[in-house]
Length: 199
Image 1 (cartoon, rainbow, N blue to C red):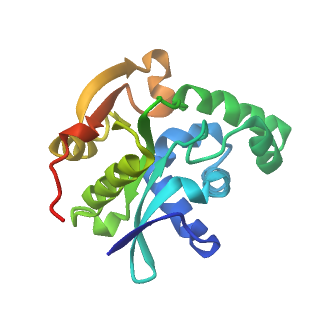
Image 2: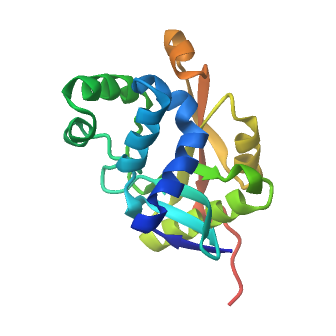
């Protein structure tokens, strides 16, 4: 398996499919139907905001991240309007706004880690986390941060095993039924906690 930064134009559909499979349940309410949502999300992904795990030419998993004030998916008003039209863009912008995170100075904020269904449990998610830690170190960041929802305990267990600790949490309140989850936690791992690697 190889992990590198960015995906090719030919890989966009595959990456978009993985992203929608993992996060479509909470994103779908922003769009009129599943097909529209999948297409919009696939088009919105920023290739340079992803770490991509491959085996040969097959994309096995991806890990998005925020950089320079932008997320792994570009949901700016201009981009949404050009993809969806004015009315649908208003809906998507309003519905997705509560899910939007922000940059944290000195911290690499992850924006969606997902692994192909048939390859889960094979260490791909863990390898992507290691690649994210390496990327953060190369950027000069002091920590890596991510969020996980209460409907994904398997992912939270992986993050905790990898040394991430809870630094915050939130409730969706009356929006829980809209997005399909009630609580989310923010976890962070300091790069200072990484063991020294031998050369």
